[in-house]
Image (cartoon, rainbow, N blue to C red; front, top):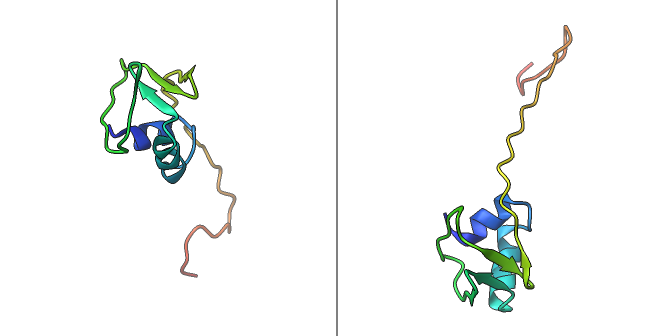
Length: 77
């Protein structure tokens, strides 16, 4: 996965913010500063932002909604 997308999925920032961090040389992968937002990373890579380790989280969110009677859930009436 590309680093900008990966870090955005870890709630570090938006992809544009991540790209800005990369241009500012603030992100390291396995100890090396990266210079391209298309750098590919995996779960086993050591990623740092401002010399702080980014912990990998695998969050899954499930939302449950009880729709009351007559509650409109479409754009068409």
